[in-house]
Image 1: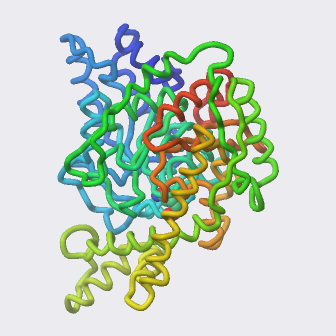
Image 2 (image 1 turned 45 degrees about the vertical axis):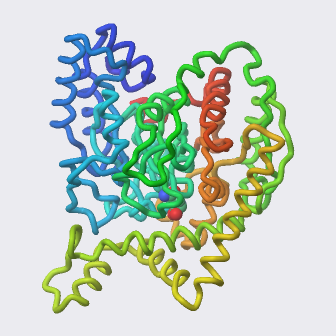
Image 3 (image 1 turned 90 degrees about the horizontal axis):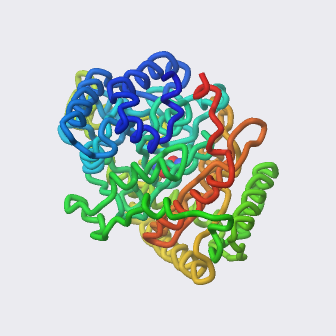
Length: 492
Ligand code: GLN
């Protein structure tokens, strides 16, 4: 019973079905772990024990009455940029520290309809801007492999909660790597699907043409359960794409045999293995590619846009979109309002200066500058053109391969309070953001350790080919044991 948090989603679903344990027992187990262990991790901003136990009791009753939804009563938790009706939704910001969402995000609804139970809301960088969770108004998240180190970001709470065994699976969002990089730092699997696969309705906007929700789990199979539940067309999101959601789980079950990846061409871009990549991380990544070869895949040399160019393009466009999106937080309609404003101008200025943290203010300034009349063509329009070229380079590369493999991040998790400059932090996103410029699906899975800290391999797929990423990872995880490794916190 004490090991319930080490079970896979499938084992949990089977255990519920076979009455080995109830949803109430499961939920209590995870809530107890959160209560005792999360003070060291800080992965939750809000825990909702009463709501969760009420839902768990209902799930047990429904199951007893013959409800056959396999995931009925399985616990999970949401990143705190997803609107959850009646529950605090802070986006990691003082600006929304008092905001109770009046409705559910579509993906929150979808997940609840599949039967999952939410245990609460997970810590994140403020407005999802950051790569180490240190910009959260609610404090940094501690890495469960080494509490003095960062969890990654911006979905740092989601990654650390799963890696600590506080929830089996969690949602996240990925605008420039915010699922893949924390998954890599915390030694778990995280997938960002194709842009348009999961509704953005009710997900607080950072950079709308990049933002895409996805999931964290220990394995590709765990991720597939939650991703399957949340994906699908939503008329409330104009960029949601009306396309059938394949049966990803069914496909995983067909993977079998010694060389399950025979015929798979894995593209390896040399631009992603150059200067800036830590040598030990590089060695672990190269070893993992050899495992792919042993499983039947062939490695193909490909070329992609220099990742330094994609980095500059992203850090121009994403702040531009953010500066526009965040103009709605004006102290008038909702969120933080300053005390005793002198007049309307003072209300706007002080509410925004006091409500937003330094990184968010920096992005608003950079974005406003790039969009201002004199600079729009030189910066914003030019970056949009480069964005198209980045996509073209990916499409060209996919003529000779089925998926692309790269390091997820140039380093392992760094110490909390390392006092990196903003530019140094941005450089850590160098391998993940091309994917978001091109709207491609991408996944990070654990492939080893350097000095006791996890390393993730990034896989990038063609548009709508989440199945290629999940299948390849499942095959890799069938032949290796890195995904079975538990962090010291998950072992406790
Ligand atoms: N680290 C990147 C940024 O700060 C990506 C964040 C994200 O994906 N939400 O913008």
